Length: 172
Image (cartoon, rainbow, N blue to C red; front, side):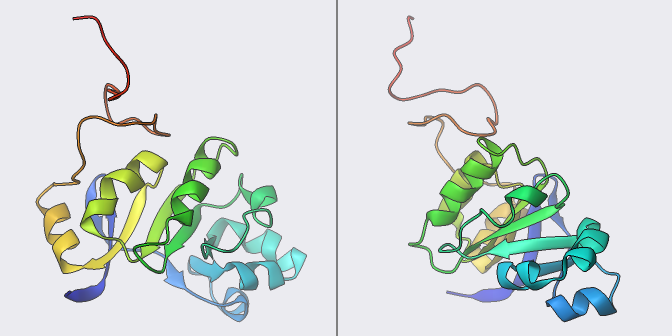
């Protein structure tokens, strides 16, 4: 597998990433938009977190609960959900929960092992941004191919068009 530097893809195509990875200490020393780990976000003093919230994003790992960021969903511009391995799908569930149950409307980014066959499902679960490293996935996205099939078993958080479900019978 060829791995490149990560590139940021949105529905409009590839674009420059305004966000940088940072730590709690970087929040005090920088005015750039920073993505913090959940641990660093929680460790920020409350006054610092509140004053810098408009330029802070949070990345959670699959095993980390969302509870600690729920009070901040109205102010967080970016939440990144990690896919450390292709066979760990817990971040799909988190994305769907953030969009449906918790009403999060900001940018939702998939990071880590984002592969071609996962892209259409990530979009259906509510991801708005993909941080892609895999060269095959990058090439397909550059060609405008998000993959997927036209029929689905479940509703999505963000339908791309008319929903068609394999289990529904429609009169002809």
